[in-house]
Image (cartoon, rainbow, N blue to C red; front, side):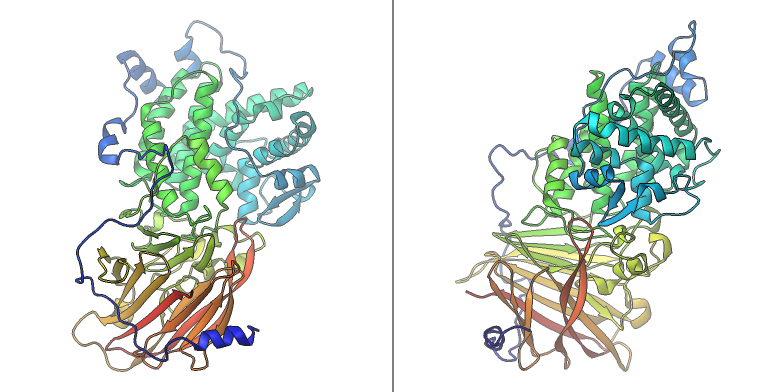
Length: 622
């Protein structure tokens, strides 16, 4: 229970007054109060300037012929050294791992467990052959060998190498034969196989430094066999990101295995083409998922380390793409550096994001207005607003697609105030798999829901169906007279037009000092005056972890006591169709993908199918 003082402060909000909202014609345009970048920070060129470099490396006639011949199945040994016997499997260089793993997870591995999103799974009970399916996050970690970085991070190599060799030996024994096509078990998706090949090569000292010569020979053979399997099957990837992972494995093998030049030339062309299809014009991946953005950057960072190991410069196009990928990811960071919870992602820790950006070598500002990536970012001193202002991604690109259109997150300094639940992509850890679809629903996001229906259909397997196809967006800066100026966003979507004949329009105005966020949600008839009757609505505001909430006596507002000691007030306007504010339970996936209990404010009631408007205010008190 919130104490009496908190209740009293909640009731001090002005009673029942309608909240005026500017319509955007009060002033002209000025620049966003986005702050000054840290000293020495660089702004990367836009894609319009980089397109000239966004192409496969220029090759001479001889190399083009080699690449073509390799593509049509001529063995690399024949092309690289036609008059010599094929070289024995070996590694040409040692790679310095650019991305440290999680020390806690590595310690758990030494103790005999995989630790994924808070769940310990005994290594001895893992079916490495894949006949008994594992929870999806554990499955990805096991078969991609992402855990090698965790193991390497927790202790000196001689202490952890035996663990790595034991697990790798068990995996190789369980997977003696390579399937003819991808998808024959979780080990043989292109994404897992490509990432596995890359991780084996990057962490080769960890898995090849022991005295077991038989295992060493087996691992080297597996590296060669996996590379050949990827050569044949990379075009059958489950999605574009999986294809990029497959091409990264092929290029890494071409760099680090003998007689690899034909494979490298083949792989570089395929990788750059696949990246060109994966990445939109503003640098965001087409799945609109920050997790996919992270994965794409991490793959390229590790691949670049392979180039550095053999003292070869990567193609300029790869550096150009890296520069494109980083700014959209930064656009989804909050004041503490951690990520917003979008398209199935959880609130990935700021330290993890910072380590990735550092390893990328890209110094840049976050993108503010990312039309194709679809997320708008408004910075006002310590206040930071993110809003999903685009349709959901196409079904073919999604892994954990969410019906989150027009949802927002808001933070002040290091404190998240309004969040989305997030975590669909880590369901199977401490978050149960049965919650996965619910976490992708519109109601799991801070936006308006009609009749408890999703604005876009949520399907099985992370896919999405019909719903939002159009989003209109207007962004402008308002000049204040005596008060501070503000940034105004107005957006609308058509996800409810087919079923209810109503367009959802949302207006958000963030004052330049970051202490006041005004909102208005409108339901507007798509044609004429709309249908007769009424329909239920709910506007949900999922609140940050640790926030104490108390309702006002009139049911029209609430007080929020934040963990940092600040106090905020929430109030709805007078023209809300009889709506009331209530408090409900919710969950939020934290920086490690673990569920945390939170609360949500819900404004709900009945509204005419002829439309309605619902104003609200969130304000920091002195």
